[in-house]
Length: 524
Image (tube, rainbow, N blue to C red; front, side):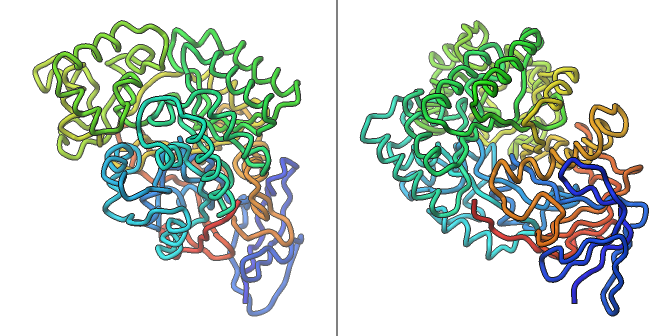
C-alpha cells in the first residue's frame, strides 16, 4: 500500500535549498517526490511545518554487542540514526577464534560489554547472521577490526608482526572485505593494534586500496604527537593510494590547542596533494573510552590477563605509575592531557560507588591516591571500566566541523552511565550549531549527517532523498529539536524528532517510542 509523507519541508541531503513537498513511499523506497501527491487509500504521515530529511548515518558506533541484546536501540533511533557503522577502533566481536575468546572478552569489555552474554560466534558472516536474527531497528555495516585479524594471525603479543604474519593478516582482511565489510578500522592506542608498525599498516592498506575501501583510523596520537601521527597516515596514503577516514578527530589537552592551525593545514595540504582524507567527530568537548587507556601501551601487551598480572605486582605497578606521572611524550597519556580531576568513571559493575566520580574523588573514596585507586579499580573489575575525559574546547570543535570532508558520529559506549553523545549527538548538531550558534546551515548539517557519510562508505541508495532511494527518513520540528542528555543525566531521549522511517517502515514516533524494527545488514 505504501505511505504518503505530506507537506514537509524537504531537505534532501545534497546541501541544496529545501523545498516543500510530498513523498510517496512504496515498500522500502521513495517512489515519487512532488509538490502535491494525491493517492486514495494510502496512509498519510503529516509533516506540515516539519523538516523531512534523509536518515542520519552514525559512522562511529559502538552498538556492536547491544544490537544483539536490545535491537530496538532507543538511544539511536530516537535521534534519527537509521544506519550505524560498527567494528570500530580495531577491536570488536569478529573474527574471534575460540582459543582467544576468554582473553578477548576482557580486553573489549570496557568498550562493548560482556560479549559472552550474547555472542558465541567466530566469523564475520556469523556476526552478520546473528544481527539478522536479532532484527535491528536500523541498518548496520561492520568494518574489519584490525586487532581481531591481528589476533587471529599472531595472537596478542605486543611486538612487531613478522612477514608471514602480515601476509596472513592481508588474506584475512581480503576475505572479510569480500564478505561485505566496507573497510578496515584500527585503533592505534588500543592493544593489539597499538603494536603495529607502519609497515604492517601499509601492507594492509595495499589490500584496502585495491578494493577501493577506506582505512578508518583512531590515530596514534590525538594530543601532543598529533602532527607526527598525521604524517604517518599521509605517508601510508602516498605509498598505497588508500582512502583515509580519521575517527573522532580531535585535539586533546589545553597544552596542545595551539596546534590547531598547523593540524588543519596539514590536513588541507594532504588533500591538495591529491590524497583522499576525511574524518568524523562528535559535537562535544569530552571523550569516552575504556579506562585502561590511561595505562602505557607496554602495560597492555599480551591482553587483559597479562595487564592484570602487572597490576598485581607492586614493582611493576610502581613502574606504570612512574610512566604515567612522568610522561615522555611517546604515547597519548590521558592523565597528562586531561588530568585526574577531569577523568570520570562511567561504568564499573562491581563498584557502583565509583560511577560518576573523578579519579581524585575515587582516591578519597578508597583512602589512597588517584593512581592507586585507578589500578585497584581496573584490577577488581578485570578491566571492565569505562570513562569520560574532558580534554577539549568549543573553538577547536567548531573549526573542525566547518572543515571539508567532515561528518558527524556518536562514538558512544552504551554501558553504565554513558557519555551524553550516545543519546544526543545528531539533534545537538541542529539545536546548538545550526539554530543557536549558526555555525552552519541546516542544509549543510543534514548533508554532513547523511549524504557525506553515505558516499564515503559506499552506502548505495541512502543518505539522500531521491526517487528510487531507500526510504530512510527523519521528520523533525526545526524549532524544537534538541538534545536533552547531559553528563549528569545522560540517559535522556532527544526532543523534536517526530518520526523515523527505516526502509520505508515507521520505526519510531514521538510519544510512542519504538514501533518496529526495519533495519538490515548492509554490505559495503
